Length: 254
Length: 160
Image (tube, rainbow over all chains, first blue to last red; front, side, top):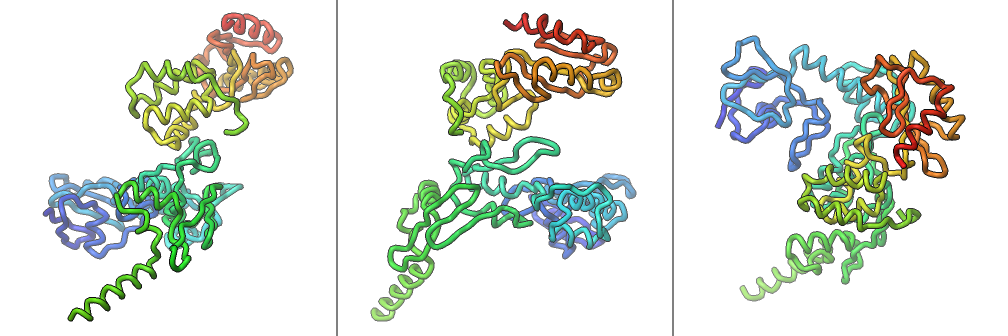
């Protein structure tokens, strides 16, 4: 298990940990936007940059790296609040604020780094998407890949194929839930759900009538897990009720 | 998707047959499809996604990323006007205007008879010949608006 120093604090972490894990283990906060525990790190938002020096490097030699996807090594030194790191993050946030001038999350982070208004020309037609890629990555992770990043440069955006309701979407809302700026619109009710222009029928508990998940979602999970469909149409309340009944019977036996 | 007519998929099948049915072949297949159909028809993309076992969203992502791919039907001959710095200074703007006058279409548009598609490009690396008009595979250096119709007949003839 490698031991390294984060802002002067010594920490020992697993050998497959990242610099971000090490910083967190040392109780040091590093800002992130595109990172989510459980998803492969991506290094897209560039907000988690830190200064890093390997054990065998000269003492004053540091390299700027993204903490979220950089592996740890024995004897490393990590500094998360050097002047150039703060300045780098400031530039990143300044650019993000130019892209999304009206997005509260970006405004907050920018303010934290002393930026009230972007020094660049603000996007004349802004939305809240910061292109962090979390939505497409979580969709890939679930094994659906219904949406992707399209076009390039200025015109880059997240969209389903041909900008039409995506045939592969299972309506799980993972993309909308994971979005740090809540910019993916959806509607959901006890009966119907709508996201990316596609409509879904909700699977409902046969006993209580509660909406559980969409039919497509249940089928997707049932197919991949081998768990029968009936498991997915049972609501949490029904499951607890069943469990309580089982316990009741156990007490009778006792 | 609904309004586009069905493409002849046999050409796509023939292209797919030339490559291993896996993700790394995607760009090669798309390039060949583009050459065969003059653009990337959406039903062909669906077939490619299915054959290579790549999610349709990924195929669409790649198709929209590269400038070399078009999702709209294109004319038989592509007319490119270089609007890089050197060409811009030497009058690329007038060439675009002249093309618009003659063909009735602006940049990124296709004539109604699907003969020509006009595009502007940023630099073709031949600044010494500025301004440049490229009709099909033919490069016309020191291009002048007055000669545009000649370029179109000369370059367009090669394609047919």
